Length: 376
Image 1 (spheres, helix red, strand yellow):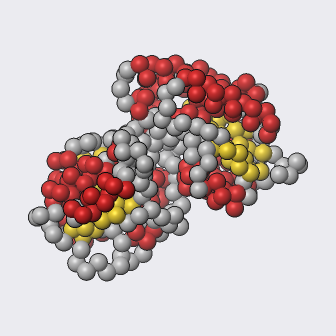
Image 2 (cartoon, one colour):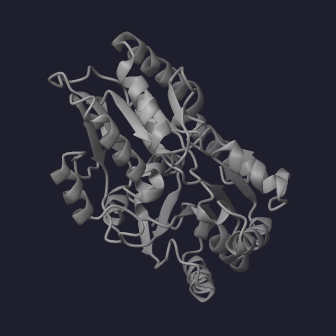
Image 3 (cartoon, rainbow, N blue to C red):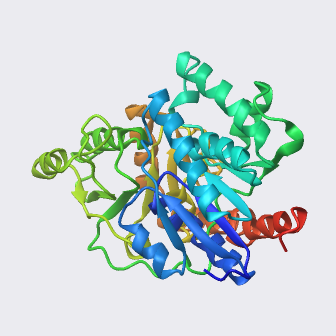
């Protein structure tokens, strides 16, 4: 690290998130003369961040845990890191860094920004977890300099609940997508197959089970339809798809598993329709932005974050969340559209991606933020 250059710390619950969803921001900030410290739990993308000339600091973090002792221990760990590294500014992504990182930054006397990229389980139901999360979030966000949102639903919810001061909030145009990198190319020959592709972390909350059940209903009637899954498996059967579960589905002949990849473009380009039947409180799903930028018609759910990307009947279809019959109906409608109509949906999806979600629009917000806080 160059002692004459200012440092910005970027904190997330996975290194995967920082590399896959914030690499454009990292490169932009470096181009502005900043050193970057990436703070996240260890995964295979720590090395990828290091190759981008980021200093990495590994911090243990239970993404889904609700143990208050562990969570406050995380705050203390982050506080020690901030005191040691002394960044000029800190950007927190994902819920636990948003809350405990904002508090740690305040205790360390370092200005910070919280980027809310989805509210997750705690805000799905108004139970005890919601009340605890809302109380902690209200305190934490009062300590952050600004709070950014990637979708309007989350901002409206927190404003209505008086969890965040409206004067601190800003609305981002989604997560941002590099529409040059994700640029459409001719679809490879598929031997008469119609390819549905679900590309995501293969978690139940992403609607993977709903997709598989819809495929079961459609396969006998449409034998030329291929139902494909692309993404990481998990070891936790309660959270998502394990290798054993995937093996069972493939033996049944319902779906085809394509594995996981660091380059989704060839797989998305080969699909006729991309799906994400999520019933989780998403930010703005990266998988949908990638598909839209590649001019693919989309089927997703009328759900927070997901509906931001799709204009129903124009760039794709919206199904009811966690509803097999609704999803199967939309998939059958897509199958029965003339090819020209599907291509037109894809063309309009890309137009929307460029107009509303291009990464350059997001980077303009970061540039303005640097100026507001006297960092540039």
